[in-house]
Image (cartoon, rainbow, N blue to C red; front, side):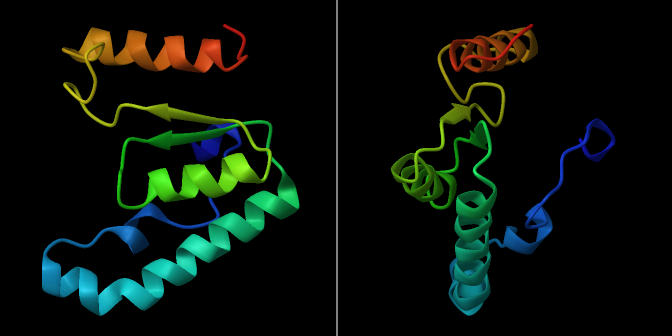
Length: 106
């Protein structure tokens, strides 16, 4: 994605924790990264935010971005993530349909 011009604000690896104890231990850092994303989005006001279906992080972020007037598209993260993403082709079709519905161009 970087080759296509995407400039990450937060590295996804910094949010990647597994297990209750790990999550609890990393909550301060995860919350700092969350605030960093919201602040950057408000400053840069992107045309569109594309988020995966991650209820613990992205859905909260989507609400903040929406309240800031930034359009948000939630796309499935994995095959089976939505009814339209039952296989790899469905995942692609579902993602593309969501992006086009948000005003993207093919």
